Image (cartoon, rainbow, N blue to C red):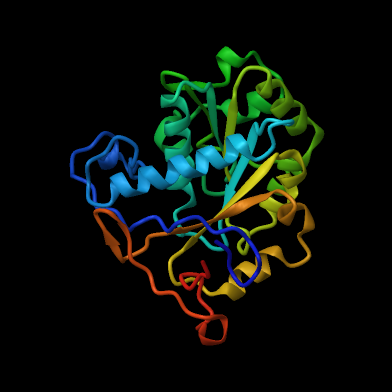
Length: 262
């Protein structure tokens, strides 16, 4: 499937409702889609599995290791997708590292890190791995920092040689490194780190204007060349057996990314 931009689009993920009292939800954690029986969660997990397969099969000669997850705008659900993709990867037996690289608003770090911790700083400065990661589950580790005192522009930190070296070290210890990045239309950080990544996954909310995606990819060849595809998130039209979504011919398109061509 593809948008008018000629970019691969995965099947939409439903707008999910989960049971209250699930692990972490009371603490502001992202919605847990993997292994959850909440409304829409089973369908969402199935689509996440397709994304994981696409990652593993994209280039058999050069296995994908570092995957950045970004979006055009905030609140599109990229953090939830990154978190659940990491959960799924770990549960399948892959050694997985989840990194919160949204240095201005580290949502995941606020959930998983102590307020006075400096895990991200230690990670990029080469401190021993045992002192830089939080073990979240079997095969799943996390790096982030809740109280990041930014000494330089975040884009400079994410693109610096120290970050490059840190990711290379991590690739020796993990099968997948999934990196939650800031929204592209809010900041330049995702573009800055893109040369260090193997693949980029773009998450956008159902009904978002195609113009937003065009702005993200405009003059961003490094993102486009690494773009695995687009995940349309929070689709309101779901059934237990799959998805119901409108399909229009190009000339009928209303310019939103929920309109895709088979």
